[in-house]
Image (tube, rainbow, N blue to C red):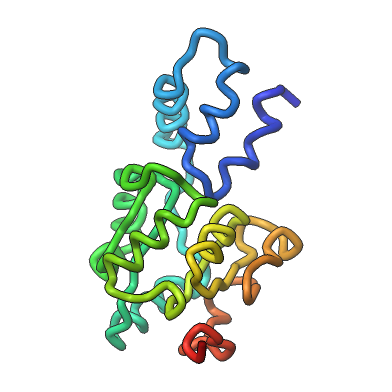
Length: 185
């Protein structure tokens, strides 16, 4: 395995530029911005599969939107990437807030994104349910004071145990979340 491939798992749920900055010594003579631009170019190749929603995601988004639940996205992806993927899935307009790596100074596991998202939605973190698929995101949600549901769509259950609830995908979500401890705190 090439040395650079060893840190690929660090990208899960974290801003790419932050990860690359921590490993810049592996790329002599290259800047973080150059490396990031190269990585983004790979994601735009024609052989990269189109976005596919997590099972149950679109239905859950439509249901929450229809019930007037304020919903937002906090992602470690770039704004362009997030908007393109959410548009491709036909759900971008359902989100009152879309916060990306471009909108924060410290990415996940720092809670900055979730705290900003809650503020923009006008909700307290302790009255918020966050859906996550990566340990860095779970840590950010918990540090913000939110209740966290993890889905095993990108990582095994054993990597997501810091969440309050772990499910296989979003088709398993019952709303309101049956164990919605944050709403009783």
